[in-house]
Image (tube, rainbow, N blue to C red; front, side, top):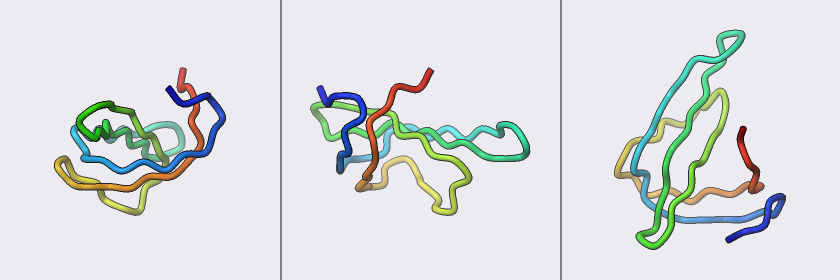
Length: 67
């Protein structure tokens, strides 16, 4: 497990993508990304990049707990 607050870079396959409208017309995207041994949910807001299930991605960011 990675400690909360740590900056990480991960590579994996997108398994599920969900797009939702949130306050003030913004869009929230969450995607389940896995490498075959573990999975995480990546979340970002007002996306300008389209992510599709089955695509390979490399993500960087801070590990945080969402709600």
